[in-house]
Length: 268
Ligand code: NAD
Image (tube, rainbow, N blue to C red; front, side, top):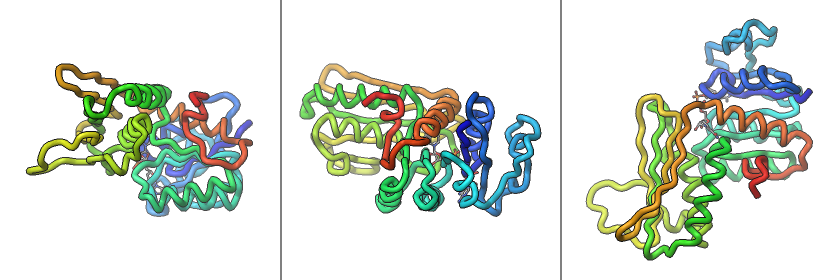
């Protein structure tokens, strides 16, 4: 039995992850923790996710959870993910991070933790998006940057706090890699007002927010007279939860290192 801990267990993703662990054969729930201010603290974890009492109460002691678990899954917030990476390194527990919106410094903290334990970090844990990443890199590599403009459009639910989404940035990074450039040198993350004409070689982003959209991403390669669009639409968060749980199981027992979902899925 692989023991999985969930930090942020009362979140939209956290609850789904608890259910996914309970429903997966060969896995046991090590426990779940939340912020001290959360109403979920002290409640039964099984009841919290609508699965009936299971005797584990939602706690606030992340360190003990890391000591108990073989792998911990984090879908929380950037500052919390950094603290959890530190605990994973200290306790040598495998960590799966799905949290997005990390700053460059916060990303360094994940890299540092991965020197001491296995860390799987992916802005999108679904199989489909990870296939999309490979496709986008391939298409970008085969199209001339001066002829094909790359634009990435994403839409998410009204509660999402970071923009562009981690997945959109990941798709941008894959396109930039295909073109042999660094995304940070060519990105245009938003446009407003009199921006002037589009720069050749730019990779542009557009962000939509509204309703309960789980996550839509389209990569557009636009030339004179034609365009190619490659899209992925998520209609259930379960694809992310399933991917994260698969990653946690995969990471347990792996040597220290920073892994992506493409490693977990064997996509190279
Ligand atoms: P949410 O706000 O519903 O849930 C976050 C939970 O984390 C909350 O319950 C919050 O109380 C808890 N939390 C925050 N700080 C904590 C701490 N220090 N200790 C313990 N718990 C803490 O958000 P969500 O929609 O579940 O998304 C969470 C993150 O996951 C976001 O960054 C989102 O972009 C990302 N996400 C990633 C994927 C993916 O596949 N990688 C998919 C969906 C969402």
